[in-house]
Amino acid sequence: MTKPLFICFEGLDGSGKTTQALLLADQLNGFYTREPSDYPIGKLIRERLQNQQLDISHQTFQLMYAADRGDHWAGEVQPCLNQGKHVIFDRYFFSSIAFGASQGINYQWLNNVNRFYQIPDILFYIDTPVDLCLQRLTQKGKNYTSELFEKKETLEKVDQAYKNILNNYKDICLQHPNFSDACQKYIIDGSQSIDHINNQLIDIVKKSI
Ligand code: ADP
Image: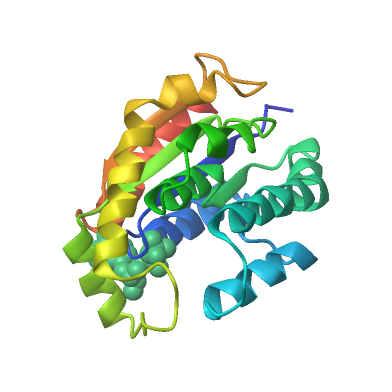
């Protein structure tokens, strides 16, 4: 059995992550999954995303994500990897760091509360300009007054936070148990066509299988 790959997609809302993650999962016959999970804490996270009035601090919210990650990993992800199936994540703890840091939480603290989670074999960062993300979200009919993270100003802050993570990727990863030089990150230009991006991803993944 070849080693199954643990692949993650990160990027802004509207960047095209879900489109690419679903395509790749289909092509690899892998398991597509996203955060938050459907476990109880994941459901609470969704409730909070839709109702900002729920009295939960930013830090507690990120601790909830970290807790949900544990349930998600143990309940769904590890069993898939054990069966030799590739796992494709649509957002992972890098999202916690990016969103949390954009709200003023210390990024080292955010990394610490996630430090026992594995680093993906491949991280794809879909790098799409904020205005193009907003244009796509609008075309998709997204009502972004109803969700917390989809306003332009917020996207710009999250974009900055992601760039900071990418610049410090190795330092962040070194604190996690499985990190090695074999773990790769790729920044993909998300303004290209869906097919063009997908072809690039397939070429990269083929080299790792
Ligand atoms: P995300 O998961 O990052 O929020 P999605 O994959 O849901 O983004 O894509 C947001 C919208 O943009 C969808 O309507 C999707 O069809 C469209 N889209 C995704 N990738 C591209 C692309 N490369 N070019 C044009 N439109 C795209």
